[in-house]
Amino acid sequence: MPHSGGGGSHSGGGHSGGGHSGSHSGGASNPVRSTYYPGASRYVYYHRGTPHYFYSNRDPRTNQNSVAAKIPTFIVMIIFLCIGLFAGASGFTAPKKLTTAVEKAPVIMDNDGLIDNSAALNTALKAFADKTGVVPIVATVHNEDWQGRYNTLESYAYDLYLNSCSDESHVLIVYSEPKTPDPQFNDWHWELMQGDDTDSILNEKVLKTFNSTLQAALTRRDKGVGDDVLEAFTAIEPLTMKPYVDTGILAFAVIWVAVIAFMFVATLKGVKTSKLQATAQPIALDAQEKTCEYCGGKYIPGTLTNCPNCGAAIVYYANEQAAQPSVNAAQPPVQPAGFEMGTPLNYTAPQPYQQPYPQQPYQQQPPVPPQVPPNGSPPPGGSTV
Image 1 (cartoon, helix red, strand yellow):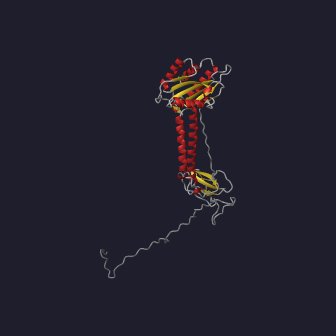
Image 2: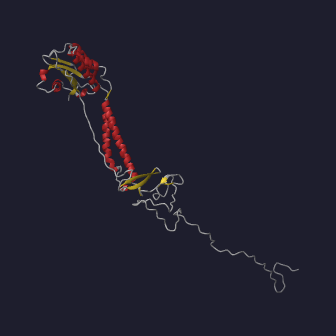
Image 3: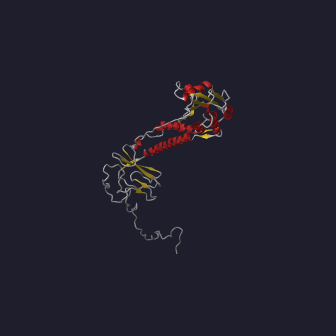
């Protein structure tokens, strides 16, 4: 349907098309904080070899803030992101000549004889139609023709467009003044009504130039109405059919997409943090970091068996307090019985070496004398002297 592209009057009033949008957002409380609050316990988790601490009044290991739980949120944000991208794309226009007009020839409806340059104006209107495919119609009426039946000239121009045009490829300029104008103040009005198909050609930049030029020319009143309309069409001739960027729409789209993208990234980061917090361990409010003797990495005693940075085994000592939540953090650590301060918990004292079997000292045996047979015969294999 046709819509107004602008208008004005001798009183200086004018109007133009426009729109408006708004949004709202909300938030939710989170029991996980970086500082202590009453009723909260202290937790630690390790990420990239570094301990991270937080406080919570409920066990974070039961947190359901997973990717699956956030799927509806992600879907909504993706939809809004697409809306912003489409809005940004609509801010770029590359006009194409219209071919949808049923009546191709421009029309001048000067029923009241207010246009005195019909030939020159018709030539300019035809050149505009040939270039753009938008067919202009210029009409002049008297205030008495519409006042009393319509509240505004815009309403009258809307009906005149519907009665004069059978498509959305026309632009109608209506000029109105009293039948007997007051020489001191001519109460004239004008209105521009355009079909929907003309929006890409008669865009905001073109209409702004046309409207301001026509309003200024009619206010000067140094030429006829026809010359004033001709001046307005001449002013927009260099602007028509040129690529156009609607900075207002583009700025809105950029801000929209940036906000949605920030929320999307923040939600993903929150899910990742929640998964890390689900691996956290409760620790005492006064638990102190220890330093790995091999790499200098930090850890809380009692939460790991290996250094989170280098992976070296951690040796715990009897004077180190277990890192469990404590109601009274000022209680001194309890020393295991039989251990002295500074003694490793996994230390075993060496025992003296004992041979498995006792050894007897070696004693040399005396030589055994040879045995001589009783009959005096030599031993076998021997001889006597």
